[in-house]
Amino acid sequence: MSSSPTVPGRRQPTPQEFREMQDSAQFGELRSKFRNFAFPMSVAFFVWYILYVLLATFASDWMGTPVIGSINIGVIFGLAQFVTTFAITYIYIIYANKNLEPLQTAIRQKMEG
Picture (cartoon, rainbow, N blue to C red):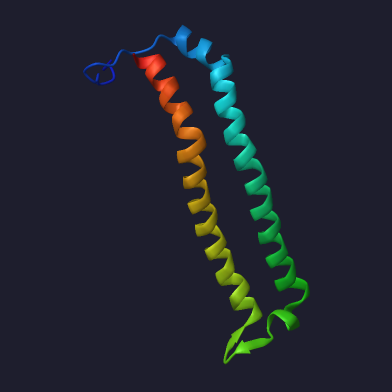
C-alpha cells in the first residue's frame, strides 16, 4: 500500500479533523456560498436549454425564420447556448476567486498547517 506524496511544510490532516471541518461553520459558509451560486445558475441554464429544445420542437417554423442569409433564429439560439456556457464559466471564475477561494485557502491552511 503506497501512501500519498507529502509536500514539505504540510501535514496530513486526520480523518477526525476532516469530519470536524466538514461540520464547522467555516466549511458551512463555503458550502453555502457555492450552492447559492451553483444551484440558481444551473437552474437558469437548464431552463434556457429546455426553452431552446421546446422552441426547436414546437416552433420549428419560427426557429427556421432566416435572419441573415441562411442563418436562421434556430442557429442563433444554438450558438447562444455556447456563448451562455462560456459566460457562465467566466462569471463563475470571477465569483469563485472573490468569494470561494479565500475561504478555501483559509480552510486548507487550517487543515494542513
